[in-house]
Image (tube, rainbow, N blue to C red; front, side):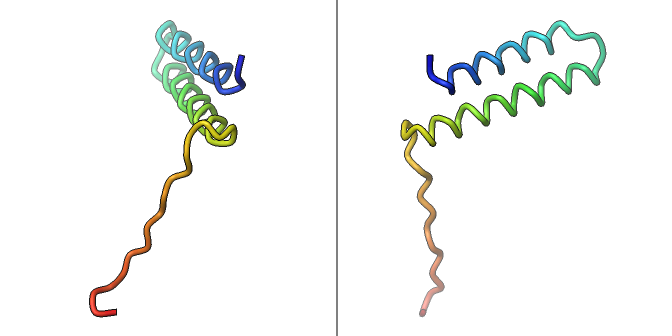
Length: 64
């Protein structure tokens, strides 16, 4: 299993905990944790070369 898949599983677990949580603070905490695990999974995919890097364009002024 790829590391990014493990991170996505952790995100899914956090979402399940959020749904079962009692109270808004716990729900928000688990939701933020899920977002963080998802971000880590995306970054790991990039590090593993599965996602191409984002192209950054250079803005040019007219007449320059």
